[in-house]
Length: 123
Image 1 (cartoon, rainbow, N blue to C red):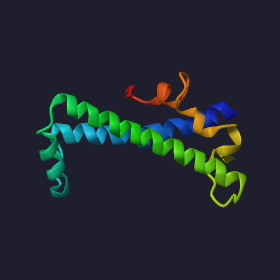
Image 2 (image 1 turned 30 degrees about the vertical axis):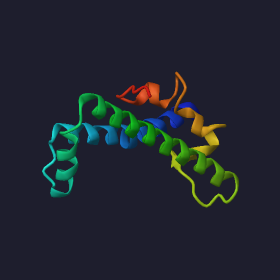
Image 3 (image 1 turned 45 degrees about the horizontal axis):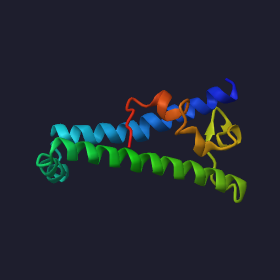
């Protein structure tokens, strides 16, 4: 596997397991599918929102997740260049060593969000 494929494997994992799962969670809250007692208040509160408010919250959620992923990737890079005590390996390679600017892999037209996310949400 070449460097780009390894990097994409990591990006696809991050997008599927962080971003898309969080958006799925929110969409299921809107649909009222959860039976867990701790989620009932959230689901009940969301039922009173207008469609526009629900979409606004969805956009805020996506923006928050995207920012958190960006900051996580930046922190990995900063740690790798200074302390080197936290490292993510994919197929035995340090993910940070495969990209000059790991945190920039998300937002471009050819980036991870565009290629791997099921949700193309514009803010």
